[in-house]
Length: 511
Image (cartoon, rainbow, N blue to C red; front, top):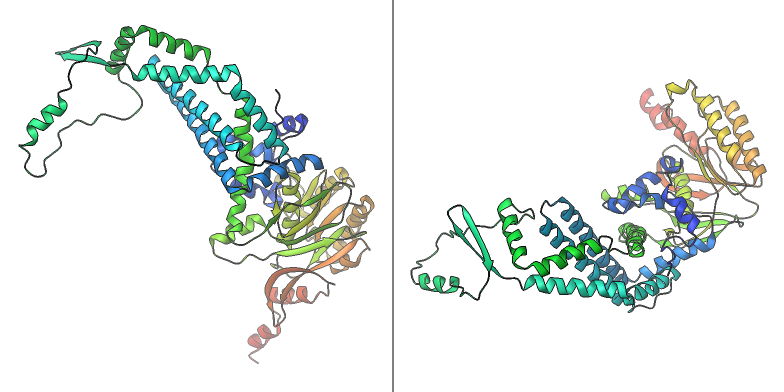
């Protein structure tokens, strides 16, 4: 019975994800920081390729939404985490077995790993039957797991494992140490005098006394004397140890591939839900976005920058949320306003929302309607690279040209303050040329700029402005609102930069 992946409804998406690399936009949008926090402590699962592979199929994304919704049941989520913990224990036991030097000790660790695995699979099946699952992926997995447990190979594995554990637990032996030799023989019902000796000497105890008992080491490795004793015990009970040898040889690959895949892929959901919980504790909202590959009407209420919010929470600082929307024929958000007012953060929020939505994840905000892109292309300011022998303006032109060359009508472009190194007239001319090409492609775009003229460039452009406190324009609110750009906030910012505000001039002139 073939099981659809818990993450990928289509096999081709799963194949592509295994070799995926971080998209070029990751650094610009701080998605690299977000992915690092989501996957922290989960290196064993190799989750990053899953987060590097956005999907382009609405049904495939709904497939993931269904799993997320089922896992919102905290009890179910805890059962999944319990299964994952047991599977980690299985891997630890197998890894320990590989490190050991002596055959029978390795085989006992292997047997314990099989027992842990059987218990994990059986317990997970029992747990899943208690829930009214809705997700296609989880329903298919539950059906597979039920069939797997009922099949003869697994039931035989469980029976053999239990019997060997019972047989090994019944082994009793004695050994006698004399000079430099040890003699091992079967236990023949000899009396245990330790309790009698303890009782005899108990009457001589006076107050607290020193404990002279030797502490046995608890590390897993055996020394050569212990190993030889175990070899002798095996010779005394050849039938049990021969069956143990045969068991280990026949069941070297006892972990079912489907369960192994499930154990890894379900961590995509667990890791993201744990990451979401950090922000939900701060009363920040997440939602399941409505997605379309054709409808470019876009909106989000109370969105926020995940990477920035993660840092601010450590400082107990408030997190500012923003709204935006585009309606036909609008395609381009042109964001202006003073420096350090949240414009770049707003652009990152736009990109983060769309990227996380393309992974099938819930996104920040009370509601979201987003566009499912084919490419997410970004241009953020970078330091000059002396190796490419290009100046700042030339490098901007080179990078923007590369973006426009690969963009399609289904792409999203985010431009953050391009052409800042040239004159205002040249920046206006070049920016309008770029916007004309973007408009011709009819793609979705965010353009952060210091040029107010771009806000009314076309009926497809929408002006959004970074706000300041009216009574004190030097204080930023970090709110980005949909309104006409008037240049006043930016003028204040320029005046501050060159120390030309009224207050500063009065101070300098001693008026």
